[in-house]
Length: 229
Image (cartoon, rainbow, N blue to C red; front, side, top):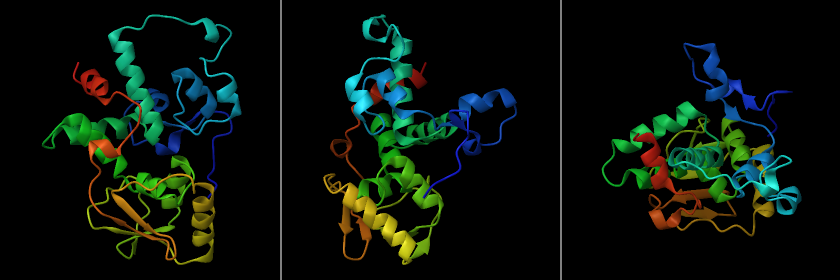
C-alpha cells in the first residue's frame, strides 16, 4: 500500500485541487510530514503515538517544555480546526467544503460535520480495521482494494450511506493487506454503527453515527465558531 511521497516537503501537492494561485499550494496541501511533531505541537495523539511522543509530549523546540503562551480565541479555534483536519487527513479546501455542506444540512452543524467526516469511505475502512491508520486507509481505497455494494470504489472521500455493504476485493493481495491490518488492530473496537464479518472481509453500515459514537477529543463547536467569524 506504499505511495510515492515527496522527498523533502511535508505536504503532498497531488492532493491539491486546481487553484488560481501557485502560492496556495502550501496552504491547500495534505500533510505528509513527521507525525510525532504534530502530536507534540497539539499535545495529543492525532496520529498513532510512538515512544518519542510519550517521552516528549510537550511542543517541539528548545523552549517547548516551558511554553505557557496564552492563546487568543482565534488561535484556539484555529488549533481545534487544524487538529481535526490533521486527524482526518484532509487538505484545507476539502475540509472547508465538507464544513459548508454540513452547514446546509438540518440539525446541529458541528455534529453533521463530524458525521460526514466519519462517513467518508476511507474513515469507514479505518474504523473497520481494514487499515492500521487513516493514511493507510486512504491508500487502501485509492489503490482499488475496496468494493461498495459489489462495485469498486476508489474515491476516499466518497460518502457511505445506511445499508451500504463494504467489501475487500477478492484478490490475494487485497485480502492479505486487510487481514494483516485486522491482526494489528485487534484491540480496536469496531464502532456500533458498523458491523464487520471477519470470515468474508465484508462489513455493513447499520446507520449513520450518532454524536456519542464519535470521540475525537476535539471541540468541534470551536471550529464552527472559527468558520463563522
